[in-house]
Length: 66
Image (cartoon, rainbow, N blue to C red; front, top):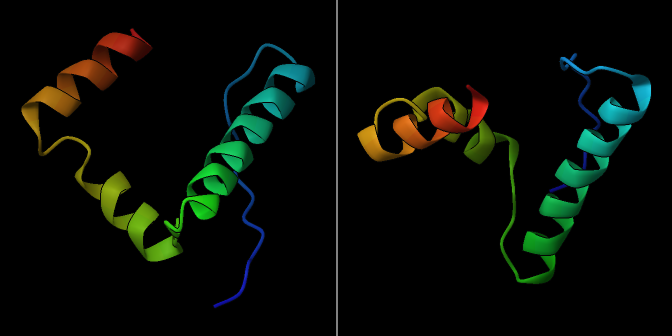
């Protein structure tokens, strides 16, 4: 398995905010990798497609982003 760069847009008030978001996501992936948990493209795709299937998770995500 190898690393691939992915690019996408995110809503932000500034380039600095977008950079902070990118750094947080990279840090999240790195922290899990150091614990022996791979954040793979397949796993991200699956969880992103199913975030709204669990009522608790869905409500918390909606609450957080509201």
